[in-house]
Amino acid sequence: MKKALTSSRGALAALAFILAAPCAFAQEARQGIAQLKDVNGNVLVSKESGLASGGEALRLTKGTRVITTSRSEVSVVFDNGCEVKLKENQRFEVDDGKPCAALIVQAQSILAEPAGAAAAAAAGSLAAYSAVLPALGGGLVGVGVIQSLREKQPVSPN
Amino acid sequence: MPAAALSRFGIVVISLLLLWRIIHVNAVLYADTGRPRLPGVSSFGASERENLFGLIRENPAQVAALLMLAREYERESDAKRAAGAYELAYQLAPHDREVLGTTAEFHLRTGNVSEGLELLGRLAGTYPETRERIFPILAGILASNEHARAWDAVVARGEAWIGPFVLASCNRGVDALLLTPLVLKRIASGKVAAPETACLVERLRLTGRWEEAYQLWLNTLARERLADVGFVFNGSFEYTPSDIGFDWRPTKRVERDAGHTVDLVAKLGSVGRKALRVSYTGKRQAGFPIAQFLALSPGHYVLSGMVRPEGVKAGRGARWTIRCVNADKPGAPAAASERFIGSSEWRRFAFEVTIAADCAGQVLQLEPVGADEGVTYLAGTLWFDDLVLRRGG
Image (cartoon, rainbow over all chains, first blue to last red; front, side):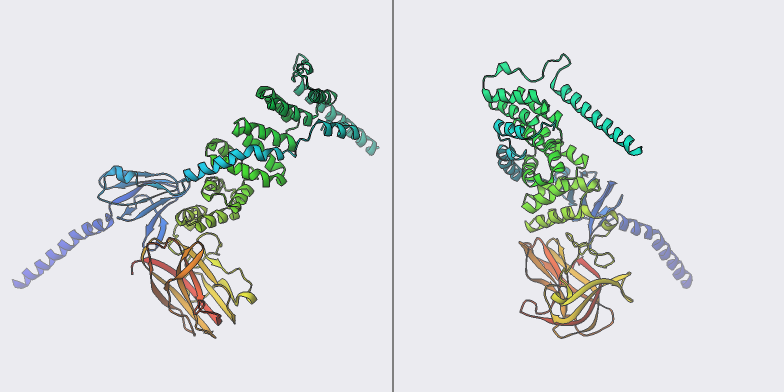
C-alpha cells in the first residue's frame, strides 16, 4: 500500500514536472521587456560579447542597445504596448520605468551633423566665394589682351 | 584609291563639322527673326564695350569677349543682361574652363547655388587641376547645409570628382560629420572607395567622436560581417584585416625595421580555419605587431582567447594590453594579459578589463613586455585565436 502511494506520488511529481516544463521554457523565451519588430536592413543589438545582428521578434532585456545602419529601420515594441521606431543610423537603449513619450525621444541619431559648426563653416566659406572664384576661369584680363592675341593668331571659333 | 576616298571623306566630315558649328553659333547668338540676342552697340557709350561688341561681331563664337561683356553688365548691376551673356557663353562653349568657372561664379554671387554647384562639379570633373581651388568652395556650400537637394542630385549622378572631394576635404580638416552624409550615400550606391571612409573614420576618432567613428565604420561592413561584430572584431582571425576603422591593424613596417612579422595562417588545433601568427626575429622590437581600436562603454569585461607560444625567448615575452586613447595617444594600460613566453600547446588565457567613465576609446594591442621602459628584444613565435571580450567579470 505504502509502495503504491510512493509510486503514485512519484508519478504525480513527474506529471507536475512535465506540465510545468513548457511554462518554464516559455518564461525563458519571453525574458526581456521588449522585442524587435519590422526589422528592415542591418539592425544590430548589443549582446554579452558585443554587437550582433538582430532578427525579427528578438527579445530585448533592459540595457540592450539597438543600432541601425544606413537604409535600415526597426521598431522596438515594449510589452506594455509602447512602440519606438528607429530610422537609419540611430541608437536606442532599452529601458523600463519610463513613460512611452520619454522612450520615443530616447532614439538618437548617431551621425547627425553639428548644426553650430556647419553654420559657422558656411558663413566663412560663402563669404569666400567671390574672393576665390574669379581665379577659376583662368582670369579675364581685358579687351586689350584679347585684341592683341587676335592680331597675332588666326581667328578660331573656339 | 582608298586613300583618296578616305581624304575626301575626311574633308566632308570636317566641312560638316564646321557647318554645324556655324549654324550652332548663329542659332545661339541670333533669334529666329534674325535679331541679335545681345543688346545693340548703340545702347553703350564706353569705347571698351564697343571694342567687345566689335570682337563678337567679327567672331560671334568669341566666348572670352562674351564673358567680359557679362562682367561689364554685372558691374552695372544689370543682372538680367549679365545672365543672358553668361548663358550665351555657356551654350557656345559648355566645356570651356573659363566659361564654367566664371558662370559658376556668377551663379554663386547671385544666390543660384544649385546651378553654381553643378557647374563647379563639371569644372572639377573636366579639369582636375582646378580641384585644389574648387574643393574648398564646394566644402563651403556643403557646410551651408541649405543645398541638400542639389548635393543629392550631384551624388545621385555619381560624378567621379566626389570621391577625391571627400578625401581632399577630409585631409584638409573639414569637419568629418559634414562629409559623412555624402559618404553614406556613396556607400549605399557602392561607389565609395576605402580611403574615403578610412580617412573619415580616422578623423572622427582623432577628434574624440568615437561613437560616430564606430557607427560610420559599421556602415562600411558587408552584411555577413555585421552578423557578429563583437567588442573585438574578427577575434577569430578568419578574415584578412582591412586596416580600417575598428578592424585589426597589423604593422606596416618591414621585418628588418619592426623585428617581427604578422600573418593569418591555418593552424592545427586552433579554432576555425585560421589563427594569428606573430614571428619575432630576435632583433630589437619597434612598434607593435597588431592592434585594434575599441569603443567600449565604461564597465567590467573579460577578454579571453587561445594562445600557443613557440620558443618565445630573448626577452620578457609579450602580452595583450588595453589602453585608453586620448587625442591618438595611448595612456597607461587599463588592463593587461599574462606574459606569453616559452613554449606550450594551445591553451586558453583570460584577463579582466575595467573601462573607466572617462575612457571613450581604447586600443587593444600585442606588445613586448617592457616596451614602456625601453628597448626590447624578442625571438620565437606566438599564435593567437578566438579572442573574445565579454561583459562581466
